[in-house]
Every structure is written in C-alpha cells, then in structure tokens.
Image 1 (tube, one colour):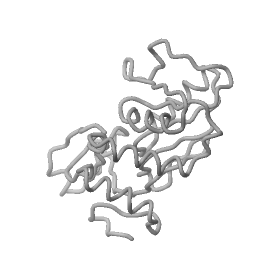
Image 2: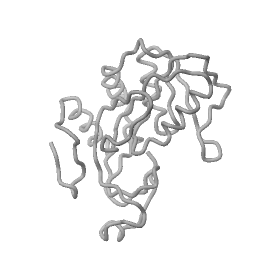
Image 3: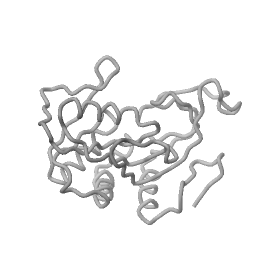
Length: 203
C-alpha cells in the first residue's frame, strides 16, 4: 500500500498483516497527527507519531510488545534498555513479556545518561528498545552508554522506523512498521508547511 507524498504516510514496501495491525492500533488510539511538527532530529514534518497516545491503552501496548517479540530472539539478550521518555513504556513491556531486566537512560543536561544507581555488567547482553526513530540520535546515545559501561548490545528494536531505511546502527535493527513521512530542514520548508505554526509535541 502506498499513498502520495501529500498523504498521511507512505509505506516503504507492501504492508504485511502485522504492519496493518500496528497501523490500526496507531489510528485507533489517535497517535497519528497532521500539522507542522519539529522532530527530535531537528527536521520538520507535516506528520507526527504521538506514541504516548498509544500508551494510554495498555492492552495495545501489550499487543505491540507481543508483535515486536515475535521478530526477536529473546535468548539473545538479558536486559532491555530504553531511552526516556519515548521508549519507557514499550521497553518495559517488552522486558516484562520476555522475562528480562529493564533499565532506562534519561536526559541530563540535554544528553542521555545512566542514573538511579543502575549498573550494566561487563558483557551483559542488551537489547535497546525505542518507540520511533528518524535519525536515531537517542538510540546512538544509548548504544554509546552501553559500550562505555562494558555491556554488549546485540540489537535495537523500535515500533516505527520513519527513516526510509536510511538509519542504521552498528547492531541489527528490528522495526514493526517502516513509514516514510516527508521531512525538511528548517530553511527548506514548503510554503504550505511554513504557513503553519510549528510545535514540538514529544513522542
């Protein structure tokens, strides 16, 4: 399924049954927004995933975690690490269902840090879980923290990859949904987007 650039979303490849179910969950929970948004990456877009809206419905979070875990080898990791705030709820639910330990990294002076006396053991096998990636900046920060602590990250799992397949990491990436929204640099906005007030809704 594919919609034109002016539509709400564009699939990078044909939609599977799982992708269709995930998309329905986002639609039914009001997580798909239209307007003028500044993403965490600094890029601007006319479309936004408000993943926090999904988290209002814990049965939907449970289902998303189930679907994500179907694509992951749960024997390959001991601990889930999620960047706060976006990855917190889905990361914790993935860890709960997999029977693994859960940690999160959070912002300190605008950079992610491992706090609250959380410890990562040397060689501890870790899965990073995030809600949405565009450029993957927060995931990279989390990977750097894990490496600095001596952990061994074996993969990244996200609900939505909106990077058009351009974002890669030094470890494998698993996503439930791959969507391509047009994004723009701040000085290269199309007139119809520039005419709207910009907001930073947060994921």
